[in-house]
Image 1 (tube, helix red, strand yellow):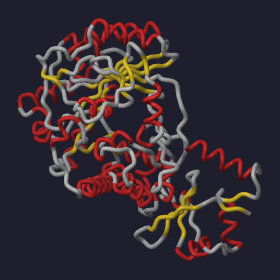
Image 2 (cartoon, rainbow, N blue to C red; image 1 turned 180 degrees about the vertical axis):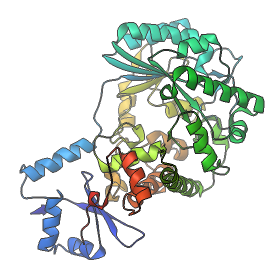
Image 3 (cartoon, helix red, strand yellow; image 1 turned 90 degrees about the vertical axis):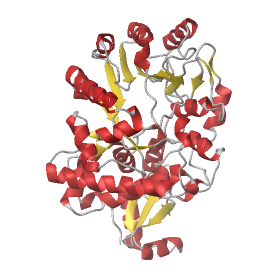
Image 4 (cartoon, one colour; image 1 turned 135 degrees about the horizontal axis):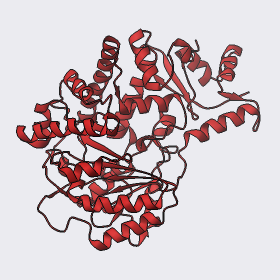
Length: 469
């Protein structure tokens, strides 16, 4: 009987987490590790490993095939292009302190699509396979050019039987033209809500009157469109985070129960903010504390808010095929199912790549909307977008659940092959998966109730965690 290679990670309580390349996992102890490393596994060890899918007799037997299938399900597969991020204008009517896209002033010229670019975008959309398509309008502030948004939506509706549109807007200045555009069944709103009014004013508007206008428009958006049509994201300054209770209560006030805590991105104007060597550690502590806060609050109130990215990592850990978030894809192929079209018609593999190019750090454009995708550039990026063979990742117990972020590595370190364990991405995700394991192994009702909701399962208990003594 052959045992598939196992990786392990020490846990604070003295137990060890063991995983295999297909994402199978169990808790064990140092004695088992010694027997495994010395190749003196007992019959009880082999029985447990076989029962949990960690062994096979010979290639192509059912156990071998099952493992191969589970491994393949962990790998992100190439998909047809069906998600476009469009930037019709880089102009904005705010000057947020942490802006990551290097916006242009509202009165600036030369930062909107030309007539030629608009025509090329529609031609590009028309060549996509369909039948489904999702278009996200970003900026700048895309509602400064509702006319361009109207052209794209009308054309897309005529071309695809199923289409969806998301407008990423600051909801700062709204009139009937803007409301009329948003108030459609296939159109959704994404905005930024940085906790309480004081935090939102400090980070985004710089003015209490402007902040009041935003909150009024957010309430109107929920009233007109319905809470299911409006999502909001907070950007958190780890040095001055908002009060957790105020943050969650404010989101609940607008019908939002999924909260994606985002640290200030190392892009655009936000690069001016110098972060210390302990920035990742500070963020990990804050995020862990927020998860504990949610577990306690959910149990106390009976209302179940979630932290979006933690829930993504949790589901990714527990089952294969959870590739909704690009940071958790592996391989993380660029220009596969989504692509970015900038205000000048340049194509980018991700929004962060657009930001990095905008500040002159490196040119990560991969073609133009008129000429198409330059596949050679994409292939160069894709060569570094896999963690299966990375010198650090191959030894990590969390490798089957994790992904890659080449653009963030380029932004922070200037190259695609830094020492993985020293990167922001690795430190952040190691902490996240440590927290996942810690929470799913708790024995209190509060944790179990939140885990069941976040994992999208009816209930949670000890029987869900394989343990081998």
